[in-house]
Image (cartoon, helix red, strand yellow):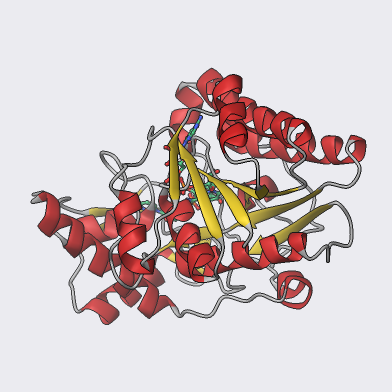
Length: 344
Ligand code: NAD
Ligand code: UFG
């Protein structure tokens, strides 16, 4: 049974991926410092799968502690590296914390891969590397644009570090997965996204507004060059996204890579506007949303959605869940955490 190290495995995308790995018959070691997640998530994962992942509370900024995980688990065959800070706005306020956390964690993992002879790594990248693309849908060959934020820049630099390292370490392989906009939650509602404070992202803001925690959703701009004037993104169900990681791990373990650094877009291929998401939420949940149009948000791009042809044909993966099912799962999760935490 392959043993997979999942950094950031109690986080939003990591926890859903751990579920899919366990259900695929793999063994999982989670490494997380709980800076943006809770230990309790491991219980949710265990309750869904009936299997308990190993959990190591370790900060990847600490090299020796990171090595300690590999000493304790000498049979790790591959790594999925989710652990990072991810808030775009916060990264502008605290750039050094973002560079330190996101770059140092990756460097320590790459050093450990060399030292402990681990050959495979899947990296969490983002469509933010494409900036405002010249052509849509955006393919993996589209040029990398100037990062709009320190966070986006860490993703670009990490991809550069990975490419350079793969040139120098023969026999190892990396797959970088560029996520579009992950949303929704596990259908069991036992795990999901846990935004701290006021959410920056659209869907958590929508569910919190419908739940009465926020008064009104602001739609950031309706004067974009899009059919209804609001901005367009490619929203992908987090369970579909998680499954792509299992496929990527299998590709690495079975040595099916075409080169030792590969990149795939993970999206649905379908662009939806903010207003379309609001209406789909209302229709699929029966909840009326209080919203108003305000100024554009600084730094936002107009539209981006994925060309998924390469991921479909070469990785053998495609997103399957529709937007209404996905928004229902986000709503079910919101209801669940609200009843648990008694938030108002
Ligand atoms: P998340 O914050 O929910 O999960 C990240 C996890 O990493 C958290 O549990 C956090 O505690 C942990 N972590 C952070 N720094 C650590 C460190 N130094 N040592 C150990 N653990 C650490 O975020 P997420 O939404 O699940 O995102 C996962 C990855 O996907 C990130 O790399 C993120 O940049 C990337 N990504 C996310 C999105 C998105 O919209 N959610 C989009 C594109 C890319
Ligand atoms: N939006 C609103 N109101 C809100 C929140 C968002 O109208 O309250 C709009 C935004 O203006 C944007 C769309 O909803 O047009 C999606 O916004 P999100 O903040 O949910 O997502 P972004 O596309 O801005 O950014 C996300 C991640 C980033 C990542 C980027 C690309 O948050 O970390 O996708 O992967 F870099």
